[in-house]
Length: 303
Image 1: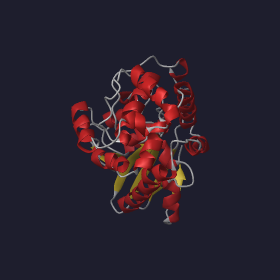
Image 2 (image 1 turned 90 degrees about the vertical axis):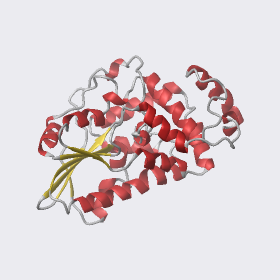
Image 3 (image 1 turned 135 degrees about the vertical axis):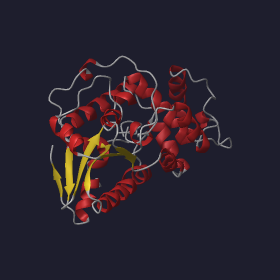
Image 4 (image 1 turned 90 degrees about the horizontal axis):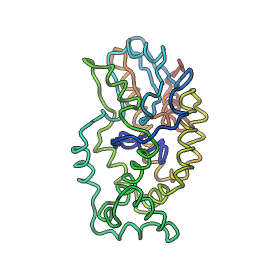
Protein backbone atom coordinates (compact mmCIF):
# COMPACT_ATOMS: atom_id res chain seq x y z
CA UNK A 1 0.00 0.00 0.00
CA UNK A 2 1.36 2.52 -0.72
CA UNK A 3 -2.16 2.75 -0.25
CA UNK A 4 -3.20 -0.70 -0.99
CA UNK A 5 -0.81 -2.65 0.93
CA UNK A 6 -0.30 -0.24 3.72
CA UNK A 7 -3.84 -0.34 4.60
CA UNK A 8 -3.69 -3.86 4.23
CA UNK A 9 -1.83 -6.79 4.84
CA UNK A 10 -4.54 -5.83 5.01
CA UNK A 11 -7.50 -4.98 5.01
CA UNK A 12 -6.84 -4.52 8.11
CA UNK A 13 -3.65 -6.30 7.66
CA UNK A 14 -3.36 -6.45 3.93
CA UNK A 15 -3.99 -2.07 2.40
CA UNK A 16 0.01 -2.14 4.13
CA UNK A 17 -0.19 -4.00 1.27
CA UNK A 18 -1.53 -1.75 -0.71
CA UNK A 19 -1.20 0.83 -0.39
CA UNK A 20 0.14 4.34 -0.22
CA UNK A 21 -1.58 6.22 2.51
CA UNK A 22 1.09 7.95 4.59
CA UNK A 23 0.41 7.73 8.32
CA UNK A 24 1.53 10.84 10.17
CA UNK A 25 2.94 10.50 13.63
CA UNK A 26 3.38 7.38 15.72
CA UNK A 27 1.91 5.98 18.90
CA UNK A 28 3.71 3.96 21.56
CA UNK A 29 5.21 0.83 20.07
CA UNK A 30 4.39 -2.55 21.56
CA UNK A 31 7.45 -3.94 23.35
CA UNK A 32 7.35 -7.14 21.31
CA UNK A 33 8.17 -5.01 18.25
CA UNK A 34 11.26 -3.34 19.64
CA UNK A 35 13.48 -5.65 17.61
CA UNK A 36 13.31 -8.88 15.68
CA UNK A 37 15.66 -11.76 16.55
CA UNK A 38 17.33 -13.28 13.50
CA UNK A 39 14.92 -11.88 10.87
CA UNK A 40 14.60 -13.84 7.62
CA UNK A 41 11.89 -12.27 5.41
CA UNK A 42 11.23 -14.53 2.44
CA UNK A 43 13.01 -13.71 -0.81
CA UNK A 44 13.09 -15.48 -4.18
CA UNK A 45 15.12 -15.26 -7.39
CA UNK A 46 13.93 -15.36 -10.99
CA UNK A 47 16.74 -15.46 -13.56
CA UNK A 48 17.84 -16.29 -17.08
CA UNK A 49 21.18 -15.99 -18.89
CA UNK A 50 21.58 -12.23 -18.51
CA UNK A 51 18.88 -11.11 -16.06
CA UNK A 52 18.45 -11.64 -12.32
CA UNK A 53 15.33 -10.52 -10.47
CA UNK A 54 15.18 -10.75 -6.68
CA UNK A 55 11.61 -10.85 -5.36
CA UNK A 56 11.23 -9.70 -1.75
CA UNK A 57 8.04 -9.75 0.31
CA UNK A 58 7.63 -6.62 2.43
CA UNK A 59 5.63 -5.02 5.19
CA UNK A 60 4.72 -1.46 4.23
CA UNK A 61 4.28 -0.19 7.79
CA UNK A 62 6.58 -1.07 10.70
CA UNK A 63 7.33 0.20 14.20
CA UNK A 64 10.31 2.58 14.24
CA UNK A 65 13.57 0.72 14.78
CA UNK A 66 12.22 -2.67 13.77
CA UNK A 67 15.04 -4.91 12.55
CA UNK A 68 14.40 -6.72 9.25
CA UNK A 69 17.66 -6.43 7.30
CA UNK A 70 19.66 -9.56 6.53
CA UNK A 71 22.94 -10.31 4.75
CA UNK A 72 21.02 -11.82 1.84
CA UNK A 73 18.85 -8.72 1.42
CA UNK A 74 21.87 -6.42 1.66
CA UNK A 75 23.66 -8.52 -0.97
CA UNK A 76 20.66 -8.31 -3.33
CA UNK A 77 20.58 -4.53 -2.85
CA UNK A 78 24.30 -4.23 -3.59
CA UNK A 79 24.12 -6.44 -6.68
CA UNK A 80 21.05 -4.82 -8.23
CA UNK A 81 20.95 -1.79 -10.48
CA UNK A 82 17.29 -0.99 -9.92
CA UNK A 83 14.61 -1.13 -7.24
CA UNK A 84 11.00 -1.76 -8.24
CA UNK A 85 8.22 -1.30 -5.68
CA UNK A 86 4.45 -1.24 -5.94
CA UNK A 87 4.34 2.56 -5.90
CA UNK A 88 7.33 4.86 -5.46
CA UNK A 89 7.04 6.34 -1.93
CA UNK A 90 5.82 9.93 -1.83
CA UNK A 91 6.23 12.03 1.31
CA UNK A 92 4.07 14.85 -0.06
CA UNK A 93 0.92 14.46 2.03
CA UNK A 94 -0.74 17.39 0.23
CA UNK A 95 -0.32 15.76 -3.16
CA UNK A 96 -1.64 12.48 -1.77
CA UNK A 97 -4.68 14.26 -0.35
CA UNK A 98 -5.37 15.90 -3.72
CA UNK A 99 -5.13 12.55 -5.47
CA UNK A 100 -7.59 10.84 -3.17
CA UNK A 101 -9.98 13.79 -3.21
CA UNK A 102 -9.98 13.78 -7.00
CA UNK A 103 -11.61 10.36 -7.06
CA UNK A 104 -12.84 9.77 -3.52
CA UNK A 105 -15.67 12.32 -3.20
CA UNK A 106 -19.36 11.68 -3.89
CA UNK A 107 -21.96 13.91 -2.27
CA UNK A 108 -24.87 11.78 -3.50
CA UNK A 109 -24.34 8.95 -1.01
CA UNK A 110 -26.23 8.64 2.29
CA UNK A 111 -24.51 9.65 5.53
CA UNK A 112 -21.67 7.30 6.45
CA UNK A 113 -23.50 5.95 9.50
CA UNK A 114 -26.26 4.70 7.21
CA UNK A 115 -23.75 2.76 5.13
CA UNK A 116 -23.00 0.25 7.90
CA UNK A 117 -25.43 -2.21 9.55
CA UNK A 118 -27.53 -0.74 12.35
CA UNK A 119 -25.68 -2.78 14.97
CA UNK A 120 -22.36 -1.26 13.87
CA UNK A 121 -23.34 2.41 13.98
CA UNK A 122 -22.41 3.05 17.59
CA UNK A 123 -19.07 1.37 16.95
CA UNK A 124 -18.50 3.65 13.96
CA UNK A 125 -19.37 6.67 16.10
CA UNK A 126 -16.86 5.52 18.71
CA UNK A 127 -14.12 5.02 16.11
CA UNK A 128 -14.69 8.48 14.69
CA UNK A 129 -14.73 10.06 18.14
CA UNK A 130 -11.46 8.35 19.05
CA UNK A 131 -9.96 9.61 15.81
CA UNK A 132 -11.28 13.12 16.58
CA UNK A 133 -13.40 13.04 13.40
CA UNK A 134 -16.67 14.92 13.92
CA UNK A 135 -19.78 12.95 13.00
CA UNK A 136 -20.60 13.80 9.40
CA UNK A 137 -17.03 14.76 8.49
CA UNK A 138 -16.67 11.75 6.18
CA UNK A 139 -20.16 11.83 4.70
CA UNK A 140 -19.09 13.28 1.35
CA UNK A 141 -16.42 10.64 0.81
CA UNK A 142 -17.03 7.50 -1.15
CA UNK A 143 -17.32 4.51 1.13
CA UNK A 144 -13.87 3.11 0.28
CA UNK A 145 -12.20 6.48 0.92
CA UNK A 146 -13.90 6.82 4.32
CA UNK A 147 -12.81 3.28 5.20
CA UNK A 148 -9.20 4.09 4.33
CA UNK A 149 -9.32 7.19 6.51
CA UNK A 150 -10.43 5.06 9.44
CA UNK A 151 -7.88 2.32 8.76
CA UNK A 152 -5.03 4.83 8.53
CA UNK A 153 -5.96 6.09 11.97
CA UNK A 154 -6.03 2.55 13.39
CA UNK A 155 -2.49 1.87 12.16
CA UNK A 156 -1.31 5.13 13.66
CA UNK A 157 -2.81 4.12 17.00
CA UNK A 158 -1.04 0.75 16.78
CA UNK A 159 2.34 2.46 16.41
CA UNK A 160 3.13 1.61 12.79
CA UNK A 161 4.40 4.15 10.30
CA UNK A 162 5.36 4.30 6.64
CA UNK A 163 8.76 5.89 7.22
CA UNK A 164 9.83 2.76 9.11
CA UNK A 165 8.48 0.43 6.41
CA UNK A 166 10.63 -1.75 4.18
CA UNK A 167 10.07 0.31 1.03
CA UNK A 168 11.26 3.52 2.65
CA UNK A 169 14.41 1.80 3.90
CA UNK A 170 15.15 0.21 0.54
CA UNK A 171 14.55 3.43 -1.40
CA UNK A 172 17.22 5.16 0.68
CA UNK A 173 19.68 2.42 -0.36
CA UNK A 174 19.13 3.19 -4.04
CA UNK A 175 20.21 6.82 -4.03
CA UNK A 176 21.69 7.40 -7.46
CA UNK A 177 20.11 4.24 -8.86
CA UNK A 178 16.81 3.75 -10.65
CA UNK A 179 13.68 3.41 -8.51
CA UNK A 180 10.37 2.71 -10.25
CA UNK A 181 6.86 1.50 -9.47
CA UNK A 182 4.71 -1.30 -10.80
CA UNK A 183 1.72 0.99 -10.34
CA UNK A 184 0.89 4.62 -9.68
CA UNK A 185 -1.00 6.00 -6.70
CA UNK A 186 -3.82 6.99 -9.07
CA UNK A 187 -4.07 3.39 -10.26
CA UNK A 188 -4.22 2.11 -6.71
CA UNK A 189 -7.01 4.50 -5.79
CA UNK A 190 -8.73 3.33 -8.94
CA UNK A 191 -8.73 -0.26 -7.70
CA UNK A 192 -10.88 0.79 -4.77
CA UNK A 193 -12.98 3.08 -6.87
CA UNK A 194 -14.12 0.29 -9.18
CA UNK A 195 -15.42 -1.83 -6.31
CA UNK A 196 -19.17 -2.20 -6.06
CA UNK A 197 -20.87 -0.20 -3.33
CA UNK A 198 -21.69 -3.48 -1.53
CA UNK A 199 -17.99 -4.43 -1.48
CA UNK A 200 -17.03 -0.96 -0.28
CA UNK A 201 -19.53 -1.15 2.56
CA UNK A 202 -18.30 -4.61 3.54
CA UNK A 203 -14.78 -3.17 3.67
CA UNK A 204 -15.95 -0.24 5.79
CA UNK A 205 -17.75 -2.55 8.19
CA UNK A 206 -14.64 -4.73 8.50
CA UNK A 207 -12.62 -1.71 9.66
CA UNK A 208 -14.85 -1.57 12.74
CA UNK A 209 -13.47 -4.81 14.19
CA UNK A 210 -12.19 -4.79 17.75
CA UNK A 211 -8.92 -2.76 17.72
CA UNK A 212 -7.22 -5.12 20.19
CA UNK A 213 -8.05 -8.14 18.03
CA UNK A 214 -6.87 -6.33 14.89
CA UNK A 215 -3.61 -5.44 16.61
CA UNK A 216 -3.03 -9.04 17.68
CA UNK A 217 -3.73 -10.23 14.12
CA UNK A 218 -1.22 -7.77 12.72
CA UNK A 219 1.35 -8.84 15.29
CA UNK A 220 0.89 -12.46 14.21
CA UNK A 221 1.31 -11.57 10.57
CA UNK A 222 4.37 -9.44 11.26
CA UNK A 223 5.94 -12.30 13.20
CA UNK A 224 5.25 -14.71 10.32
CA UNK A 225 6.78 -12.28 7.83
CA UNK A 226 9.86 -11.73 9.99
CA UNK A 227 10.64 -15.45 10.21
CA UNK A 228 9.88 -16.04 6.52
CA UNK A 229 6.80 -18.13 7.26
CA UNK A 230 4.99 -17.90 3.92
CA UNK A 231 2.33 -20.41 4.99
CA UNK A 232 1.62 -18.29 8.07
CA UNK A 233 1.20 -15.18 5.93
CA UNK A 234 -1.17 -17.03 3.60
CA UNK A 235 -3.19 -18.27 6.57
CA UNK A 236 -3.47 -14.72 7.87
CA UNK A 237 -4.88 -13.54 4.55
CA UNK A 238 -7.25 -16.46 4.22
CA UNK A 239 -8.70 -15.74 7.66
CA UNK A 240 -9.15 -12.03 6.95
CA UNK A 241 -12.92 -11.53 6.76
CA UNK A 242 -12.51 -8.05 5.26
CA UNK A 243 -11.13 -9.60 2.06
CA UNK A 244 -14.43 -10.28 0.34
CA UNK A 245 -14.27 -12.29 -2.93
CA UNK A 246 -14.61 -9.08 -4.95
CA UNK A 247 -11.96 -7.27 -2.92
CA UNK A 248 -9.58 -10.23 -3.18
CA UNK A 249 -10.04 -10.41 -6.96
CA UNK A 250 -9.39 -6.69 -7.46
CA UNK A 251 -6.61 -6.16 -4.95
CA UNK A 252 -4.77 -9.48 -5.07
CA UNK A 253 -5.58 -11.81 -7.96
CA UNK A 254 -5.70 -9.27 -10.80
CA UNK A 255 -2.66 -7.38 -9.59
CA UNK A 256 -0.62 -10.55 -9.04
CA UNK A 257 -1.39 -11.62 -12.61
CA UNK A 258 -0.32 -8.21 -13.93
CA UNK A 259 2.92 -8.34 -11.97
CA UNK A 260 3.72 -11.88 -13.13
CA UNK A 261 3.38 -10.64 -16.71
CA UNK A 262 5.62 -7.67 -15.97
CA UNK A 263 8.28 -9.91 -14.40
CA UNK A 264 8.25 -12.28 -17.36
CA UNK A 265 8.72 -9.39 -19.75
CA UNK A 266 11.46 -7.87 -17.55
CA UNK A 267 13.57 -10.97 -18.20
CA UNK A 268 14.03 -9.65 -21.75
CA UNK A 269 16.10 -6.76 -20.36
CA UNK A 270 19.61 -7.56 -19.05
CA UNK A 271 20.65 -6.56 -15.56
CA UNK A 272 19.85 -7.20 -11.90
CA UNK A 273 16.78 -5.78 -10.18
CA UNK A 274 15.20 -6.06 -6.73
CA UNK A 275 11.40 -6.15 -6.79
CA UNK A 276 9.81 -5.49 -3.38
CA UNK A 277 6.05 -5.97 -2.96
CA UNK A 278 3.70 -6.69 -0.08
CA UNK A 279 4.29 -10.14 1.41
CA UNK A 280 0.66 -11.12 0.94
CA UNK A 281 1.15 -11.08 -2.82
CA UNK A 282 3.87 -13.72 -2.49
CA UNK A 283 1.89 -16.20 -0.41
CA UNK A 284 -1.02 -18.55 -0.99
CA UNK A 285 -2.53 -20.30 -4.01
CA UNK A 286 -2.67 -17.13 -6.13
CA UNK A 287 0.83 -15.89 -5.36
CA UNK A 288 2.99 -14.17 -7.94
CA UNK A 289 5.47 -17.06 -7.80
CA UNK A 290 2.76 -19.60 -8.57
CA UNK A 291 1.63 -17.54 -11.54
CA UNK A 292 5.22 -17.34 -12.76
CA UNK A 293 5.59 -21.10 -12.50
CA UNK A 294 2.38 -21.52 -14.50
CA UNK A 295 4.12 -19.49 -17.22
CA UNK A 296 6.95 -22.02 -17.24
CA UNK A 297 9.41 -19.90 -15.26
CA UNK A 298 11.63 -21.20 -12.45
CA UNK A 299 11.42 -19.30 -9.17
CA UNK A 300 14.01 -20.20 -6.53
CA UNK A 301 13.70 -19.26 -2.87
CA UNK A 302 17.00 -17.77 -1.67
CA UNK A 303 15.97 -16.78 1.88
